[in-house]
Length: 292
Ligand code: NDP
Image (cartoon, rainbow, N blue to C red):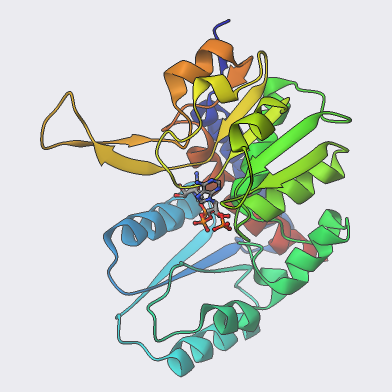
């Protein structure tokens, strides 16, 4: 079997087009554009690119986007003061603080300071709690897990009763995507670094989601024939075909897995593009809810 490739780039474009139309309607109704404020502390090269892309994406769909670039030595109190100011600013619908933060700042404290109704990353315990009690409709749900669910919808996989295995239990990806699968009535297993015989656990999966951060860890013979494989991993490795160069790979050995899977996401071009598209959706949703 050769798997159907789930094109995240194309799907993300569709999501962005829908958001763009929603933003235009919002502006007509409320006389202002939804606003997304992104904060970065320090100069981590990858984070700088991610945050610039988020601001740019907001502007492209007609939102007000604002990137706050703070120096690495910014104190926790100063960062918290900026967040409180944005919480109180009615033109701000989404606040996103790029993680990881420098070590001298307590990221839990920072996440807690964000008004949950503006927490477009969905990391605040109020939003995580709403998702955990089955009230995603009241929450802002983390973007990458929502992207995974959109890709599963694209695959057309029936989720009710399906066996789903999520590898990874982070608060950002593993746990929330498991909650979303559970809400769709899948039978969900969350695997992690202590899981015994991970290949055997994975072979049970009709839906396999890898969010580990280990290049090509999931091998082809871990995949059940016909399963849908969603690869969240983004890993930079040296490119043996181009000495001195690097390339991106996922957590799944793509070529091997594609031989057995029914559908699979590529890296890059799978989950990645949907993360920013879902951030825009969350910002529009927040703006609409806050405007009543
Ligand atoms: P974390 O490092 O927070 O979590 C990794 C998880 O993988 C942990 O739960 C860990 O288990 C588990 N794990 C580690 N090693 C193994 C192993 N050998 N066997 C089984 N489980 C293992 O990562 P994130 O969740 O933040 O990210 C995961 C990947 O997704 C990364 O590659 C990241 O770059 C990517 N990512 C991609 C995004 C996108 O937009 N496409 C967005 C966010 C992340 P334990 O808890 O026991 O330590």
